[in-house]
Image (cartoon, rainbow, N blue to C red; front, side, top):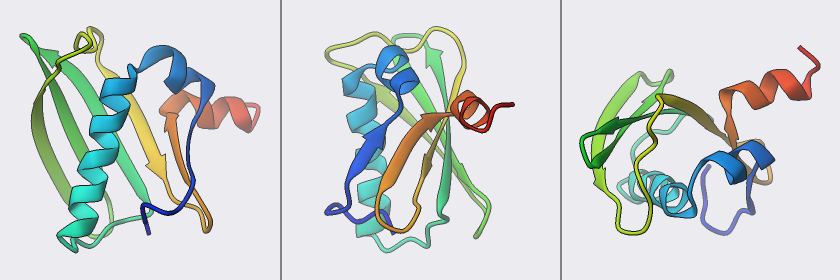
Amino acid sequence: MFERDKPRYATQQIALNVSVEIQILLWRIMDNRRYTQEPLDYLQVFHLQRNGDMQRVVNKQEEPAMEMIVQLELKESQPMIQPFGLWIMVPVASCYFQMNTDWRKKDGY
C-alpha cells in the first residue's frame, strides 16, 4: 500500500486548490510513514490549517487508529488560509489524492 511505484493522481479540485509544494510534502509524509513500516490504513485523512507562517497538517487514519500533527515551513507557497480537508485513498493499482467533497461529486450526492 502507498508504494512509490504506483501511479499517483490528484483530482481537479486538489490541483486547483492545493499548491504543488503542499501536495509533494503530503506525499512525502506518506512515503516516510511507509519507509518506517508504520501500519497504514487504505484511507488517509489530512486536515490543513494555517498556523502563523506555517502549514499545520493533521494526518489521521482509522485502522489502526493514529493521529499525527506536523508543522511545515513552506518555501514556495503560502499556507492554506481556510481549514481544509482532503484524503489519500489507495485502491488496488494506484493512489488518489482528493478533497473530501470530491467523493460526493463523483457519486452524484
